[in-house]
Image 1: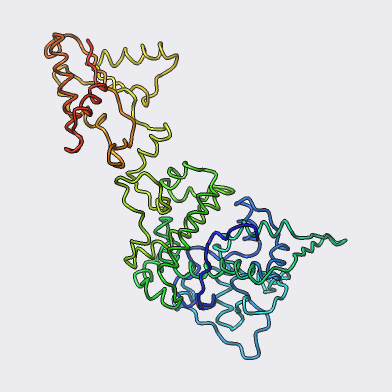
Image 2 (image 1 turned 135 degrees about the horizontal axis):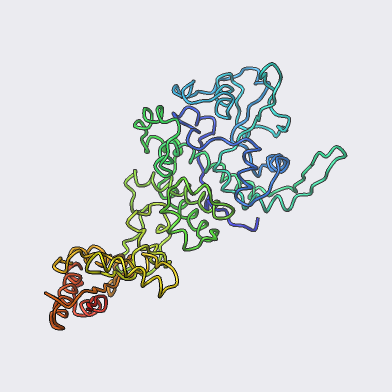
Length: 465
């Protein structure tokens, strides 16, 4: 295939998908997908496919569902172990997870990756409300959506024929053994992520499903014990996470706007569409693996290098670990800072009544506070130190050695008062201005209080009468 695999090097591990059901909270935080669900989710990511395409992809072993319910179990059916809390603890009637758990206990659940291909488009006939209803019999992991780019390429190469009754038949040419193995890497990654996401996904999305059971079971999670059955080295997890982050960066049409998106409430991420949503899928998958490495105390593999003195961007800078304190800098970089460009300090109520009207006359409409923000100093005797430092004090970002970035654009200060008391003469006005400039300068860290910085602060403050 012509496209790189987003998960990079395949993660070889022996854990079968059936064994996931014995893990408390398996498939609760990221629900299993029926073929119709998978088609819908693919469409939201800009890839148009049909269940008939999925059937052919399964036949060619390019996209094998994670689990399958069979109507006729083997001659000696074996029940699949299910976590105790899963039995009636967090299932809802005839949901994918309920169907899977019920089938597992009855010995009707199999791993389709180990079975010869058999059509499943007829569904699973079960009684419902006095009649037979057909439910899905195969289920995908949501993490198998990470292979959508490759799936789209294969779908476009299929031959599609339509029978007289409208039934579609899709035909895909044989794949090489290497192509099948590479595509199966996504399924193996999906199994790994499904073993970890019940602990990490609520912390990433800030939302836990089946909260009562989750609060009981989650404290028992231990990352080393969970990873031991996979036999994967931490370095393998790190390589896969970095490959996912690289793919997200190259695929995401939002570009630098991603820095704002990751600071938004995670509930809003599902509102993304097309490649932007698929790129977020890559990042969430990478973050699950990286948080596992964090808990293994392998920060050398999961944390980006220190920003001090670093001019290049590291792959791990794109982690979903943005801090709320980064918001002002991200907004400022895009010209969206809510902080005023000018703080207009006025003497009293009369000025506060008249000046907005004057500004509206000059501007043609009310002046937004992000441009000019009038402030009432109440009295000409009021000390402005705290006000000026709070509003206009510089907020510093990354230190690059010979310069430090601001996390918000500077706010200029114009103090407009009557020429009286401490503002009576030109010299007194200069003294008041210089005092405010010194206060701004003193708000800087000691190492940055240079004469050059003092000059720059001086350009921000003006007193007029």
